[in-house]
Amino acid sequence: MGIVVVEICDGSLINKIDIEKILEAEYPEVSVLENSCLSFCGMCAKRPYAIVNGKRIFAKTAEECLDLIRTHIEAELAIYL
Image (cartoon, rainbow, N blue to C red; front, side, top):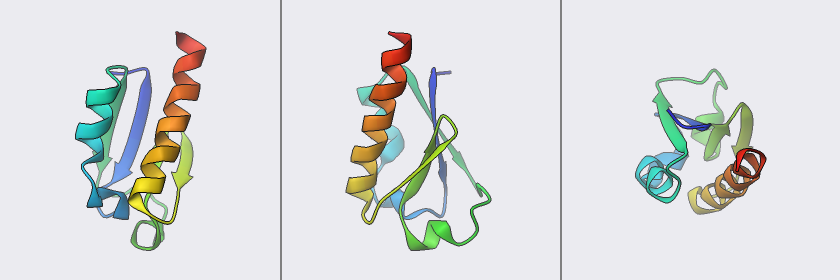
């Protein structure tokens, strides 16, 4: 398991891209966990979002959200590396 955990809802608009494959290939320290529900009712249908080490990240598009997720991953990794 990675030192950075990215959680995604299987109904989230972030799933328009293969976020798990992208992030785990770019960052060996990251684990992407897909859940059936992250208890942010309705948010997954309105905006792409994910949770990075407990912090909710969202944007208007899946690509923008992925860029923000990468930024947060880099900040988390800076603490450990």
